[in-house]
Structures are given as C-alpha cells and as structure tokens.
Length: 228
Image (cartoon, rainbow, N blue to C red; front, top):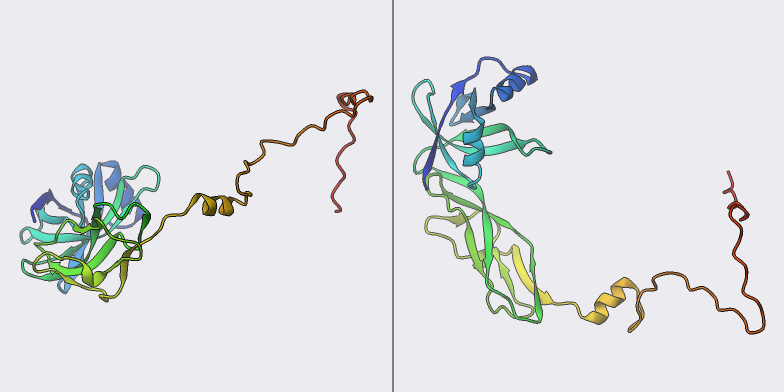
C-alpha cells in the first residue's frame, strides 16, 4: 500500500491549553508510541491529516522527526462531534514486514434472491496483515444467495498474506425473508384492508332534529385537573 508523507513537529508542551493552541494554528496534536519506545508528542498539519484519514488504515511516514522518518498507523482518532474536524490522533510505530491487527471494511456486491432481504451483521472484520500491505477493503459477493443462506468469517476470501483474527464461525451476513404486506400491517396494528383513520369523524345529525350548534368560543369547560 502507498505511504502518505506528513511533516511532524515535536511538541514540548502538553495538556488542554497547549493542545488548543496547536489546533488554532491549523495543526493536530498527536502522540507516537510503540516498539518499546517512549511516547512522543508531535503536531501534524491539519489538512494533510484530514486527507490521509480518508483511507482506512492509512500508512503514514512521519518526516522531520529526530533520528529520521518513521512509519506509523493511526490507532485512535478523536473528532469534533459537530464539525467533524480531527482533534487528536494516536499513532503506533510499525516496521516493514511486521504483522499488525487491524479492522478492514467489508464491501458487499451483488443482489440476493428477489424474495430475500440481506441482514448484514458485520461491516468490518478484524484481520492480521503486514503493516505495509493492509488491504483497503474485503469484497463480499452475495449475488444469488438464497433464503436461509449465510456467510461466516471463515467463508471470506482474504487477500494473500491476510489471516483472520476472529473466530471463523462468526456470522457476517445472512438472507432472511422479506416482510409481506400483511406482516407490515400487523406491525402497524392495522386490520387487513383498513387504512389508518385521519381523524375522528363528526356524528351525523338525526333526522328531524336540528344540528347541534357549535360551542361559543371560551364557553367550553376547562379540562379536569389531574390529582396533585
């Protein structure tokens, strides 16, 4: 997989106050750890980080560090819940050829049987792969799967060099019956063939009796007070 090069600057001040200053300068505070080294505090260009994180498990080469560049993978990302901007990143050091455990997105292709409904239990799968050869996704073809058919983790077709890090009998997806109109009506609590009433009907006047006059505005009795 391709590397994304990002210039890193060491940080000497930590805590919420210095982190806010880093963000105001358009950078992202981050920590770098792994391989038995001491945790290092760095800052990264905010725009470069945002672009890099669009790729799952992106491999980042950090430039400008004392002792030379380093390869790292994002381990945890904190984002602003409203703006979606990156607030902080935890990076773990990796080496070429080193095996790492990561979550890979599952991409479903194809269509199941017309009378079936796909029930997907997992949207990603945990695998072990070389740090420099992590697949961006794992494709799952469900074309023509019949009612009752299922697919488990052990059924997935994994790229070369990638192995499962979960039990093979974990359910990934299966095909269930699509609900009928009667079942949908039953869930809504409606008798078959009836429509939900739009509002309460006004009673018709009895023959020979004048229609009831509408209540004068303000003459209605106030609603009964709930017992205190």
